Image 1 (cartoon, rainbow, N blue to C red):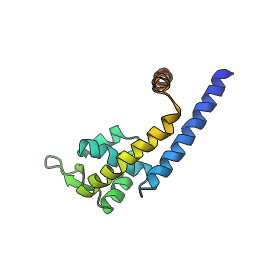
Image 2: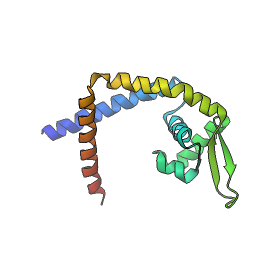
Image 3: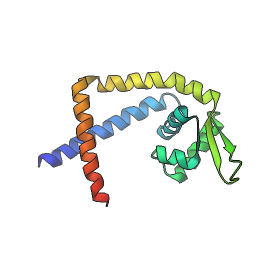
Length: 142
């Protein structure tokens, strides 16, 4: 029974965290998916669409829409691959980089504040336990 209770607590915590993270990101005029793509491009600067799909949890069909929105906002650009005319590189623009340089420190501080209720040792223990159960749960996919 305690394991079921633990699952419910974890699910509620996940939902609460997702809700406040979504609100925080939307306060900058972005959706969570747009933020995820910009965050990855801010790190790697230029990726193929399939590489973005591997790095963020957005299905290909949704990613197309997200990329169109980010391009219309001027945060990314598409560059056709010279070796494969069907493929495109996605690059973050100067405007996108500037936005992320403004947002990321504030967002990281927000996350620090949310997790501020935990000590460093508790965060390490939480990470260890979540990884442990996550790796174990993956075995059920085989």
